Length: 175
Image 1 (cartoon, rainbow, N blue to C red):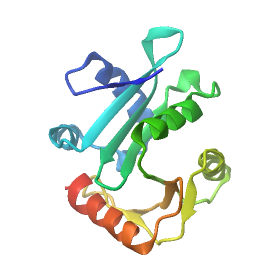
Image 2 (cartoon, rainbow, N blue to C red):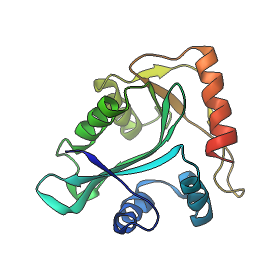
Image 3 (tube, rainbow, N blue to C red):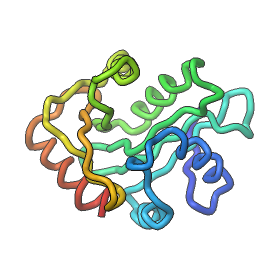
Image 4 (cartoon, one colour):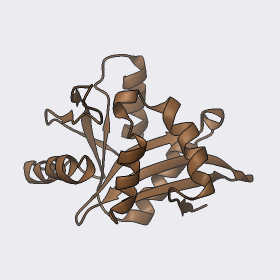
């Protein structure tokens, strides 16, 4: 099954928001204005994957930025009622096959069982942990930048690639 590209006027967008809002802490969420601006940038993409047996139910979504030499997954989540059904793995595998570029994403530092489990999920899919000290800029001025780990697929990134990602994150994604 393939992904469907979604925009802010698409009927799937409402279902994506219903998964997005409880899946990410407020300091990791775009507000409506930030989301509108993201949609205005042709490098931003929002993809929906439908449930295999139900064309009216959203299984997962991926929001990402397509840069020249890599893609950055900003947000990825699976519908909570469908977790444990291999949807996350199949979605990310399909995405990597379609993109055919290195993929970067961020996860929380490994401080508890949940964050360690999330890391192992990505590790099993071939994502590599990069050791750069990394802070994601705040989406909202009431929050501070927060530390995250940078994962990359299929290989680790070098300093030059990290510096490009950091620049793109600060000046394109978070503009």
